[in-house]
Length: 111
Image 1: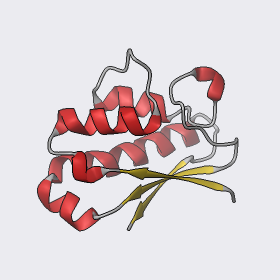
Image 2 (image 1 turned 30 degrees about the vertical axis):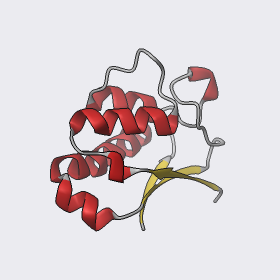
Image 3 (image 1 turned 135 degrees about the horizontal axis):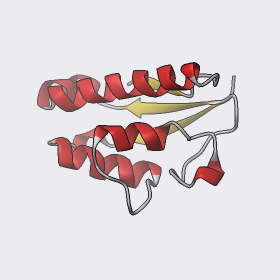
């Protein structure tokens, strides 16, 4: 299976607001991105649909987007709520896609 790896600079995340700033910058969420977890899930649900215009970093249909989290132990210790939100949101995206008859599209790589 083909995968696109996107490095997420979690060292820049210090709270929920910076979580959204980092992901918006890393993945090219649109200007109208709502900076909440539901909006994050909505954007990430369409990473294999460039026409949706929800992310500027996309993958081919059937491929995975791997979010590479460097320094995961530090991130989890410093920002436990944001770490947990990331894990839960990735799961929610994949679960929603399966419910919609689509393949999972996200994976986390803890580096």
